[in-house]
Image 1 (tube, rainbow, N blue to C red):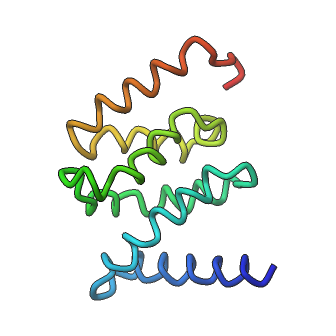
Image 2: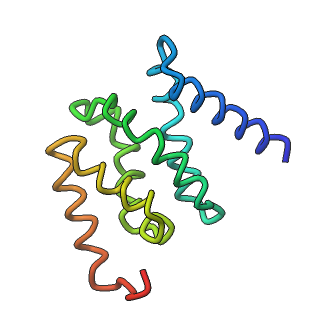
Length: 126
């Protein structure tokens, strides 16, 4: 329980630093993105987690999509958002996914493929 509180405090500090437009905020937020993303994809994720990730979506523009080796793991997590019920059911989740289409031209093809794979088994309720 204490580790969850510590992690939550770290998230809050990094988000505050990003939203406060402090000097070198880019260094904090690039570490926060993968952590928040993994939390949002966890089965215990809440709508509030999606809102937090959505609120820092512009920080995704800082990522280097040209360096395939360094971005590969994060790209896989980003692609998982298109099949996550929580992302699809929340307005912020859908907006986050739509923001992904603006990140990098090569990533758009990956997103299309991830969505196409999901189409045959999508439930109407989502």
